[in-house]
Image 1 (spheres, rainbow, N blue to C red):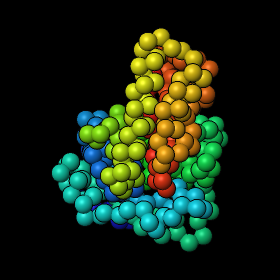
Image 2 (image 1 turned 30 degrees about the vertical axis):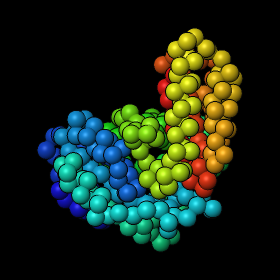
Image 3 (image 1 turned 180 degrees about the vertical axis):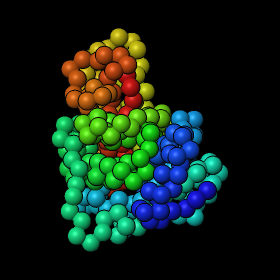
Image 4 (image 1 turned 90 degrees about the horizontal axis):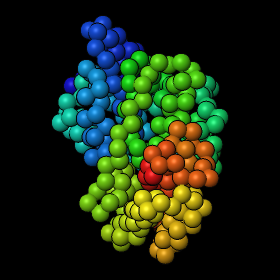
Length: 280
């Protein structure tokens, strides 16, 4: 496994990989790797001949009230995960390498990024699209491997890729869940035992919504009301949004279309922000 820190060296390694005629998969991460990331890498291994994992805590994804310095960083453990998963290249650039002094160019997507997380975190997706565009220009992958848990990010990435004609496939990997049903995530790992117990209400609400749809309910208003009611019973959990959207465009839907409708939930558990979703 090669560890690369500079853009110039990453470009050179990527050229060498492409010269061998194989497919390259890119797994973009901000580190603090967990079982969800391991599943992305495993899928990337199936989808390509060479796997590049980027580890970069992207400051552009953090809003004014969000502390990038407090984001967990576990470089040695991350490299262990990548070694065990037989990653070919780990790209670990510094902030100065990606955003050198005087940097002033950004990429925005103006439709799929606006609802849901785009309401409460208006600058977040500009950071996502900017770093993804840069990584794709540097690595030139054939496919980008992302997780269902962050499905809005994947939708925004797909739209940007299509609009800007990058010619990169987006591979979406199902959410990996822990024993209590919580989606694996960096923030989930930081929950206390009591917070975890409170947070499991999100999975309960998703399960209830699925049960209702399976029984024939098609009203999005009814589902949203029930999900909101279930979550509201937990004192330490506050709803940011509950919405049912088109799984491609992220536009709100009036009626459930099985297999196409997506239930999206974001909550605060005390001061920890969690997101989750389910295809209905």
